[in-house]
Every structure is written in C-alpha cells, then in structure tokens.
Length: 486
Image (cartoon, rainbow, N blue to C red; front, side, top):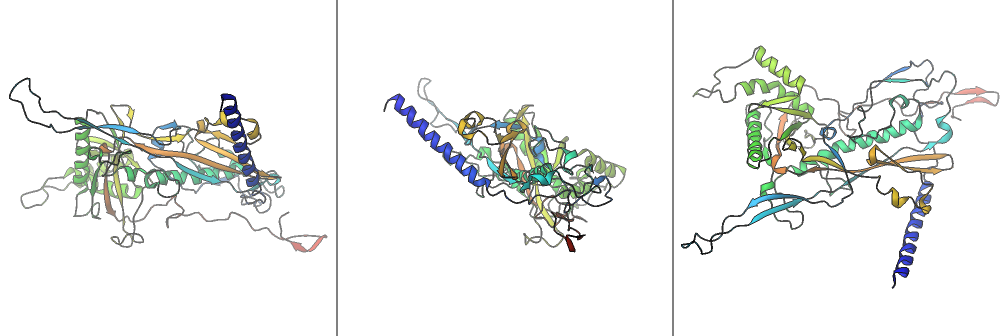
C-alpha cells in the first residue's frame, strides 16, 4: 500500500469514527426532555415565597482537605513512571591479596512507582429553557443575596470546584444553580478520593491512604522496594488521651524517623504537613500540651514528677489550636484537618462502642530540598484535544473547558430542554512514600461530633424543600381550582 492509499484509508477510518461519535451524541441528546432542575422562582420555586427577605443565609457545610494546598499540574500521561534510586547492594567477593586482583563489587538499584487518573462525572438536572426566565408574579423577587458562601473562594490553581460559578447568581439563575450543584458534588468526591480513592472501584484514583503504606513495589516488575516503604504504626484503638499508648511518643518517634530518612537521603529541608480529621485534632490538641510538657518526666516509681495544669498548659493548647500546628522534637509541624479521611465508628468497626470513633494521623511530605514538590495533583488537560476535535464533523457541539482545562462541560439539548455534564480526571501523586507516615486506629470520644459535608454520614444535615408545593388558584375557566403549575 503506497502513501496515498494509506492516507485515504486513514482519513476514511477517521471519518467513520467521528461520524459514530456524532451519532452517539445526537442519540444521547434525546434524554434531556423534561424540566427536572431546581426551580428557584415561578410557582414551585423554593424561593418564590411572598414577602421573602432579600438576604438568604447559607447553612451548607463545605468539605475541606489537603487537596487545596497541593500544587495542581497538567498532564496527558495516563501511565506515568516515577523513579527512585533505592540504594546499593552489598559487596560481592572478598578482598584480594594482590592489588591487581579483582576486588569485591556491588550494584546500584532503583525502583519506579506509578499512578493513574480517576474520572469524576456529574450532570445537572434537565432545564427547560423558558423556565429560566419566568417568575410567579410581582411578589416573586429575583434579587436575593446569599450571606455566606456555598463554596470556597475559587482559585483556578486549586481545581476542587469549577470557577466561573458566580455567588451572586446561584439564587436567581437556574442554570447557575444547577452548575453549582454539579460542582459541589464533584468537590465532595474529590475530597473523599484524595484519601480513600480505590482504583479497583469504578474510575477512582489511588488515594493517599493507599500510597502511604508498606509493601511498595516496582511498577513494571512487581519487585518489592522496601527502601520506599512508609512508616506505618498502629495505635491499637487506644484513646488518644488515654493511659495506653502515648500519642506524643508515637508522633515524636515518627517525626524523628522520617527526618532521619530525609537527612541521610540529603533531601532536607522537607516541608511536612500533619493531616487528620477535625474531630481527632480537637481531642488531641486538648491533651497534647500536658502530655508534651511532661513527656518522659517520670520518677523511678513511674509517676509524673509534676503535672502542668496552669496558664502554660492552657496557653499552649489555645496557641496550637488557633495557629494549627504541633510542636514535635523542637520543630513546629503545620496541621491540616481533612474531611476526606475515613472514620471508623461503632457501625462499621467492632472495636468501637457507641460514641467512640477512630481514624488515622498522617505525615505528608509536601516538598523536599526547600521547594521541589513531592506530593502533588495532576489533572488531565482538556485544552489539548481541541485541535483534534475542531473538525467539520464535530462542529456545533457546545462543549467547553474551564480552569485552564481542569474541568470539561458538555451540553445535551433536545428542543427547549438542555442539561450540562461536568467531567474532571485527576490523581494525587506521592513521589516519596519513604518520607511519609501514618498512625492508624487512634480512638477518640468527642463530646459532640461535628457536622459532616458527606451526605452518607449520619452527621450530614440539610432539610427544607427542592420543590415547593403550589397553592390552588381559581378562575372563571377553572371554577374548581387548579394547583398545577403552568
């Protein structure tokens, strides 16, 4: 086959593939046929209440985690390799009797790690075009103002929630409200997968809990790489402030172990973050000052030399809580509270009684050598396929990307009905698991559990209405009344 024939065959295949894509897309559009989106105004609208105050107060609890603090780097590599020099073998052979005889020799060894993207997809509900512009009557105000925010201050570098979602429009424009809803769902899932992501389930990416682990293996050969193992300790479900295992001892030893690794591997300075759930942080910070200030202060009989319970203790507790840090081995470690870390309770763990909880505390290396990121996030860059998609057969598709290509939106339309689909493909990468650690199964018993942003949690709360019942209206043409909107 000559070059001309090969080109003709390639063009034919390309045309057939693109035609199938367009056909599939057109068939998929037929699903968007009925208005199912939230109605803000116009009869059944949740805010179409006569006499409603202009100010609407936010009671939505937003998820938070370490993901917002990590660099977000574009990538199109679906199967990357991250190499480490793991060390040198022992010498083989014996010392020679003569200077010119063969001497013992050894080998350098290395290991590669890998990661994979996870896909997160959410749709808006179907929106009927004319429903976005109508209101119930003059008593239905469309100048509502939200006090508080349903999402963090959007920064394009964070990539946890699409930008362009305007706070001032979320209560008055249906399309914006639906896009915000899809964005919030994606944000919740990203926060969860940052720690709990399991690539064996659906299209999730591997979370940090699976990467901060022992048993590291070469990504191509499956050979074990113990030089890359994390420091993993088990607290055995002892209470964080109890008389069993000492949380100061465990964290101090882990900090020293990881710093020893970093110094001997010549990658200092390292910026570590200590990450835990907010409930664990509150309980740990309550007893940390006393435990830290009296650590190893025992008499020969095993009793404390002195118990500090004055302004020094209270002052240190308040200081570490307000500034979010832990003093360990003479160094202040920044603390990050993260809602995405899995929490055990009496319903999923037989080691816990009602009111007791358990989770892990993590040491996460953010940078080495002062500025080189070793824990970061990748996103599949949706800007790159534009050149391939911008061909005659795909013109007319109203797809677009936002946030430098982090999020992709696709429009599905049928007559006057449409919906928007949201997609992002991300992963979290830990290049230096040997500088990371976790203390598992730390038990705590808070007086009150905090509100949760996870709808599956018993501590999640919302309430109210998504559709407001429509009152009966009467007319000469409807003498018995009519309660159906429009």
